[in-house]
Length: 91
Image (cartoon, rainbow, N blue to C red; front, side, top):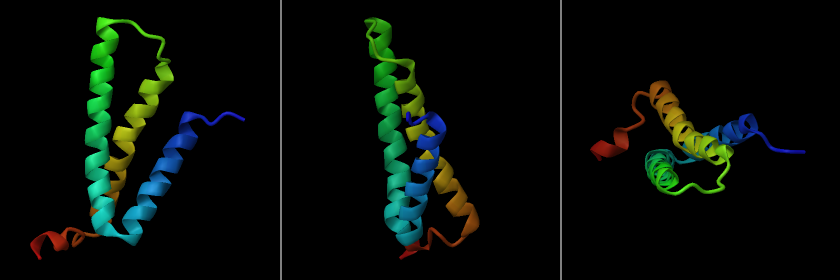
């Protein structure tokens, strides 16, 4: 049984939502930091791929893009559901 892209997306959304639900501070930091790091890796991978072709499958780029998009979706949803979610910034 192969794990496809929809299962990976659902798993990421579930993990990030669970972390955010139990600890908003850690969830917020993860949802901000992980997409930045993943986006940097994707950009570097595309640049290196343009310079020298490799045997990296196209699925790698799809999975990495989901690693960028999923935490951002969770962050936006939790911020929309709870307008006072960033109250810890004022403390």
